[in-house]
View 1 (cartoon, rainbow, N blue to C red):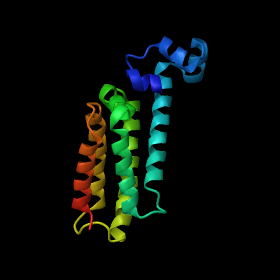
View 2: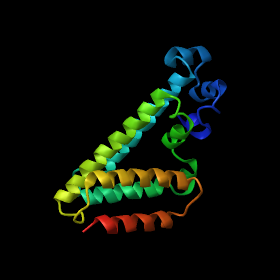
View 3: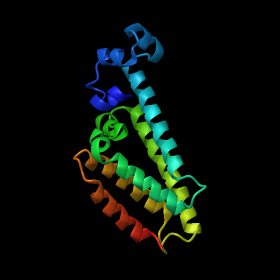
Length: 178
């Protein structure tokens, strides 16, 4: 996963993967079929890890707004400094492969649908708890958050300062919160 994440799919060579996995070429083929199979496995792992992290941040045992704040803080951390410059495997893959690889496109679409579902659920809880401003609709804000998160991922590649993202997040929360 890290090799693909650092280099991208096309720039990753089979020798790079053999070195990273410490598998022989024949073992790699036996386990994953080919480079593309290994890549899909790595992408699936990345997506599963991202959704687990989102579930932890939005944990229903805390207030919905606290969970959303934790989620936003997590994105600020992941899009600032060295992690921000590294970028996001999902965003890089969407840009490199999704337009011509149906398997990749399906995985990325599934990720965004799962993410949106989790955010809608948290925002609906926030609304039920009286924490959202009147007229704020959870599905619309969830989609806005996804665009914000992924935009932060892209802008993070430029070395944006965390305080810029923090100000943007505060502005958004001020608009949607009571």
